[in-house]
Amino acid sequence: MRLRPITFVAAWLCASAASAQIVPSAESLSELYPGKAYSPYAQHKFPSRPLWGDTHLHTGLSVDAGLFGARLGLEEAYRFARGEEVMASSGQPVKLGRPLDWLVIADHSDGMGMVFDLIDGAPNVLEFEEGRRWHEGIQAGGEAAAAAALDLITTFSQGKVPQELLMQYSPGAPKYRSIWDDVIKAAETFNEPGRFTALIGFEWTSLVRGNNLHRNVIFRDGGAVASQVVPYTTQAPIGSTDPLKLYEWLENFEAKTGGSALALAHNGNLSNGLMFPVDKQYTGRKLDQAYVEARAKWEPMYEVTQIKGDGEAHPLLSPDDAFADYETWDAGNLDLSEAKTDDMLAGEYAREALKNGLVLEKKLGTNPYKFGMVGSTDSHTALAAVEEENFFGKATNAEPSPKRMQHPFTRTENGAFEGYELVASGYAAVWAEENTRASIWDAMARKEVYGTTGPRMMVRFFGGWNYTDQDLNSRQPAVLGYEKGVPMGGELRQVGRTGSPTFMVYSLRDPIGANLDRIQIVKGWLDKNGKTHEKVYDVAWSDNRQPDENGDLPPVGNTVDVANANWTNTIGASELGVVWTDPDFDPDQSAFYYARVLEIPTPRWVVYDAFRFGIEIPEGAETIHQERAYTSPIWYTP
Image (cartoon, rainbow, N blue to C red; front, side):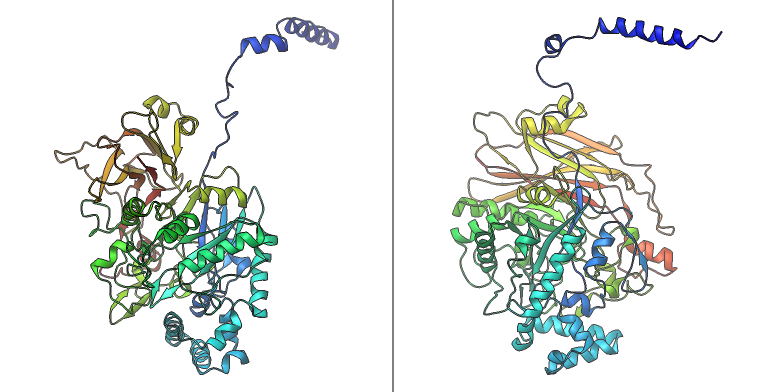
């Protein structure tokens, strides 16, 4: 039987009157719910998710990118990073699997924009014999173009490019000013706070006898501040290859503009031992208090992995680490003009630098190598594409083709890096509170960052003194992580504390990627005799494996099908986490700790090439690997 409308109204009014009798007043509400907010996320201000980006991307404005065929510019680079489809320089359509949250276009400051005049045969270039030779090689194409590119890079690294030519593309030249204005304009156009951040930056291209000492400079501010300067170069008399001079430039920049900037050191595995000196610089200057303080101030991050190899650890430096020999590049320097020797390795790899930083801190009072760790691409295609199944190479001549595995990256009488040795790596994750320039830059400055070889696994790492399993199992571990300790990049102090520090670490797999094998904590420390040590602890792992009598954890297994370029997530775990206490802690020893997260085995990019092009994989090429993440360390100082 259908009620008349008046009945509904009367019933609603009666119900409302009854409800009104039980609605508490404001005074009684405060009595019912005193103290902390019920919502675990209220009244807390901390980053809730990692923002993914690339600190190291080149467009055709970089001399070496343009010489190897890159024709994409600033606009295409930003559009691609934001998730749009673009046409690669090789004529292939390309799109990221997932957009990035932010990007730093870091074109080389030396000779920025010169390559387009080389290609066009501009009169100011052709008046030099070298300029004519390079132009003719580029126009000939193929191997001639590649030879011209390598010749220019080598000539530059040896300081033999005509100064009159370089000065046309250096600070003070109108052409250079115009190019820098274009860089800033593009960043301002594509910067969209809250959705996508375009950080302004450049690469300072210190190349000493082929030894890579490059740094990327990243500005916190927008175009109004960045436009008050032009990039610093290595060209004398205005510029220098000495990092101390770069630090002076940064100091002057901040004093002049009121803005903020930082420098990011490249992975050092092509520096032939010069990236992390322990006694003196390549200039012969002894390391002193001024050096360690300046480096600690201006270089809060290190690029631990990229296309030209992984730089976390080396098997000769870390012989007890079963995972140290990963994508190792140790044949020589950037142009292979000087062969690598074992004594150079200690000045190139992140873990050894972190240990040596403890030594220098004891000696000089400041740790110059107290850096956070990120990954980035160093792609010279304007495409930040390093997904294994979507890898577009180091340069245009290494974009997907049936021949790119056999095409060497570089080769001389001292050694070679073959095409199949290029690494589809990496990305940088920042724990920023919001997707803006200031917030992302601040996360970099405080080192709350981590790097991966490409996958986007989420990793949290906290250090304190009284974390418990319940803190982790609460499903809101970040709340207690910040309340009871410090995040990655932080410093532990033992004031009023007893016992050993505890670390809370957990990781979620990339939502569309591989399961996780294990989480490790890497510790380095300085003993009372001034000697450094390291140890790798397996702290969380999948599949109910048990360590053997030597404490070694069995491998997770392998589901890779090389023939069909596939793997399955039938092994491993979607998430791992643990609260771990250092069993070997000595309160009198300075130390650092960082987490390394390993995925289960998956195919390298060469497997996808072989499957899609129907070709053979070259002998010697690795086909299977375990991708990984490296957090920034947490330091303990007595």
